[in-house]
Image 1 (cartoon, helix red, strand yellow):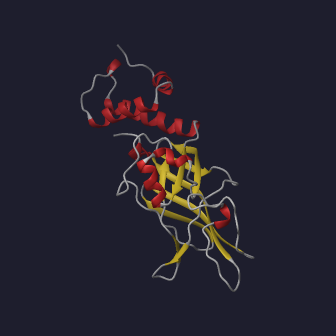
Image 2 (cartoon, one colour; image 1 turned 45 degrees about the horizontal axis):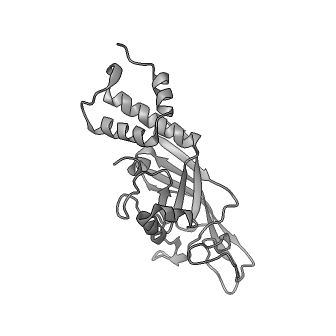
Image 3 (cartoon, helix red, strand yellow; image 1 turned 180 degrees about the horizontal axis):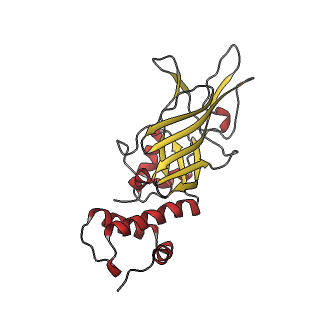
Length: 231
């Protein structure tokens, strides 16, 4: 019996649950001999599963959010906590490269309310934002606090910046300075949720200027995303 055409298999996978696809992908990646219909090879099945996950991420506009390490730890204990926490930034999947297995995430909404982090001075006398961690709402298993999801730090330099965090993660962000900064009394601000007026801010008492940062794009490899999708 000849193998089914690729487009037919992908069509079938499009109706398959993400959990099932990830289980099949995991089995095809780690097992040399699994029962496969129509003489499919493990490598071929693995490739089709990856292609479906990448295309589904764009089709369903998968979301990734940047959180403080403490907030991420809360989510690690109870993922429903993410619904009540305001992220530092929120990005949606807008495209992908199936050949390189990379996904592109862009700012979810220019008006989104964000939680922002203060600046700290490094030994090189450069401003650096306190660390962040990334959470994907589609993750089946949330990567642990150590190693699997490294903390991210971005240095402040005016203008558009690109930082290659690892070979699997690249972040594009914009640094700017706004004037006439002042003290704000926002009724919506709490320790768990801060409004965007606290935008990655460093205040100067003499000039009343504010240093700000905006995360614009993130490029993630499928390998990085799969850390939370497979066992």
